[in-house]
Length: 149
Image 1 (cartoon, rainbow, N blue to C red):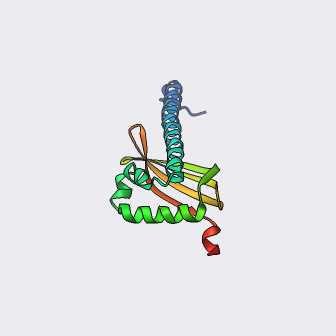
Image 2 (tube, rainbow, N blue to C red):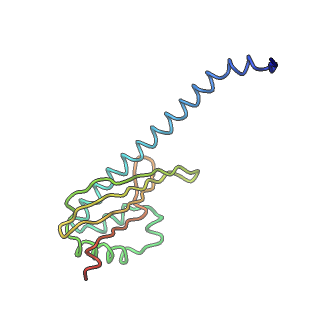
Image 3 (cartoon, rainbow, N blue to C red):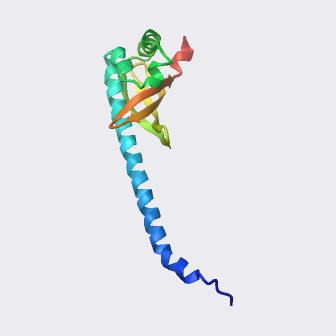
């Protein structure tokens, strides 16, 4: 049987490696759950503003990625279209979520099966995490209601 001369030292360092790997995983997962919670809370605020047609408030609290590419007038026009066709948001359930961690920051994508006053739809939110705030980067909604007219 052949033995590598460093086999014993490798075996002794294995528990340390596993400990640090577990520590790294717990730190990452803690940040992921915090970012998901911030984004879920931001969706609730979004729907409150949506139901009251407060689209300027949504736009003003959005990320620069959204406001640099979309004028307030165009954003409001799209939101008014959604609000007029769908009616008020009644409730929904999360279908999926993902967190993207990069060197330029974290983002969270949430997809909801949503029920509106005039029918159902699927909402897609992308938020950029800025400190303790989730800022809207993009929003879209699809619904069979849009195809009926």
